[in-house]
Image (cartoon, rainbow, N blue to C red; front, side, top):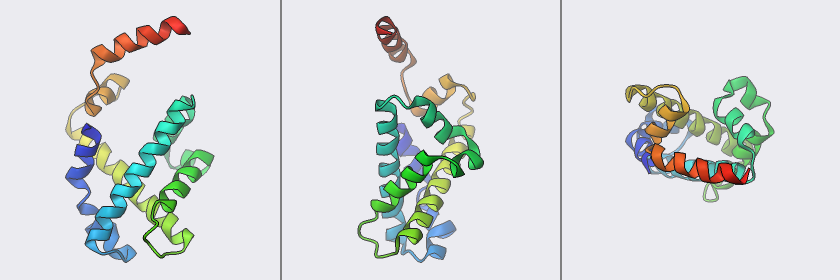
Length: 147
């Protein structure tokens, strides 16, 4: 998956920018970035599968204020913090780590997106993610018949 390739390209920078200050070792920084990404992807997939597309769009593009007021963002942070089962920190400190990691990953993905010169359109995002537009169009036509 292209998304994981992008994250792998910059995740090593987390430790120097945040992990060291937060009290993590270099290997812990890498593990917790991976756990956070996995947990976040599972949560976003569950939103999609349950038909909460609008909520997912708000979560992804609503900005800092929208995130602060979002029950979905709070659940996302809770799920990420819960995935840190090997970390003996209190819950609030784990949530703080999740916020730092998610911010770092989103900033890194935004930089990769801009580096790639993709247009800021749904098609540009699909290109960035490596999604075949032809297949997506055929699937959209198929699903459109049912709705």
